[in-house]
Image (tube, rainbow, N blue to C red):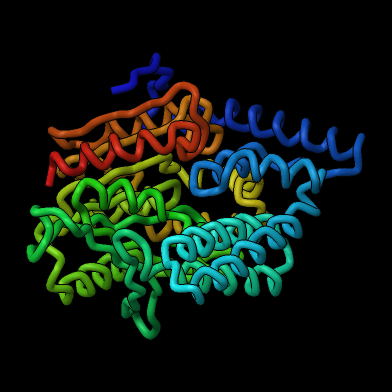
Length: 390
């Protein structure tokens, strides 16, 4: 366990006592950005965006070069989309020649450039177009991945959710046998394709992975209201139809708001999941709504009103504040010491409220939201922890 000094207040609801710290930190970051924009006429590229992009697939030097050329977050999407198109053209070229590994790498790079161009784009019509482009690039890469990614549709209420199912292969442990599966849940308005390297770390250890866009997630400003309990049931029903999946060994891996959803699913269905990983899960969405809204809006580069509505709806669908002690399965709770969205005190509080005899706390002092600075090594540490509890 990576330990930190505890600043946990006496109150049962720590976020109500530490809210001024979150507010002061968030206001300070926003003020620096506003001063820079006022002096230069340019909007700076958020540092959190850079950490996220590099951790999840973009080359650090190539991204730095694009930022230098664009000089502003307003112009950066055009440079990124040009790079995505260039990679897509190269992928088609190698694909036509039958050189699948080279085509795969270029399709993947095209998808990653597109994902982060969409995040920086504010026009909803343009965002939808970019989403379609990078989704297709990833879909083109999917059959050539190692192991491949199978596109799946998961029935949910009156619609379907799109996802990718990947099964480990090539080892004596997995060939011809049922394998354990990890359901991976991303943060707010973060697409399933962004989870590629999280999947790889789990696949390398022997898990199958299921990543999907939960309701309203992909290609939209914010998810609409959805029944998280019904969502969990739909996932389990889908996995039960897959002969390669051992449904007695299902785990949850959630990031940011996806972590909050994972914790709620573990509370609501204690007999369906073997273990749960929670990374940077926000604790009190309603009590901290006024501070969380601008923090998430800045992190995700989304309109504040849309973010506020999403947080309110998700809070009502995932009431974890008074029920964390119902979790008795193995739990790994992780967070960053510099996180201004999910403060380290809240991460520690979530950990302490969970009533499992097998739980682990990872508090990384130098990390921000979602621990992007710690990637990719921490992914493999988490995969190993999950495997030991399978």
